[in-house]
Amino acid sequence: MEQSKRDRSLGRFLSLVLRHNPRAAYITLDRHGWAEVEPLLAGCARAGHPITREDLERIVRENDKQRYCFDPEHRRIRANQGHSVPVELDLREAKPPARLYHGTAVRFLGSIRREGITRQSRQQVHLSAETKTAWQVGARHGAPVVLVVDAGAMAREGRRFWLSENGVWLCEEVPWRFIGEEGILWGRETPTG
Ligand code: HQG
Image (cartoon, rainbow, N blue to C red; front, side, top):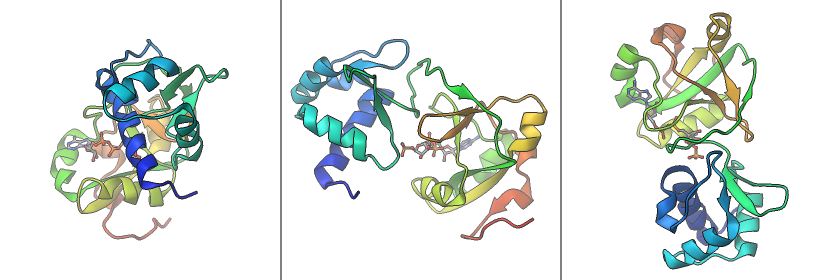
């Protein structure tokens, strides 16, 4: 379902609070990234983003990427992935598909060739199972390219992968040798072979 402009804006504020800067809503997260709903609602109002419990339920339910989840009692809420603050998400370790995709900007390629894909400000590197998502993620940063990651080979080397509740693949880093020049998709083509 298409979200309203207000819900998208509230969603962006929630992402900021639950992933990056809980103090923006005058709250703290516990070790596992959970925020208590009541203080969160009060803090959002205080920060100039008034939000009701119904709003919050709807945003969590209708969010396009299922970015947030409640605990079973709906007393606490957290982001499923994407944190820059350190949190233990008890992520499920999983065997990745042979290939995963990372969307990035053309302007980052030089640095990625030298260093590989690194976490930057987040807790992990984010990869997707389909190219469509990767193009969208890449386009957030400028003219996009999609990198094809040989996740199978990484797993065979003992590198670990996790799958978030909302289907994002996570790993610690991707050295360039698991991508290579032939792993760069320049246009919206799908990989062959
Ligand atoms: C790039 C969204 C230079 C990296 C998406 C990316 C995702 C390097 C940027 C989630 C580099 C970091 C994460 C290196 C990586 N040199 N640049 N060595 N290594 N980069 O936003 O992956 O909508 O932290 O390619 O769906 O773009 O927020 O990471 O371009 O799952 O729910 O540095 O954010 O989810 O940018 O996005 P980000 P990302 P949400």
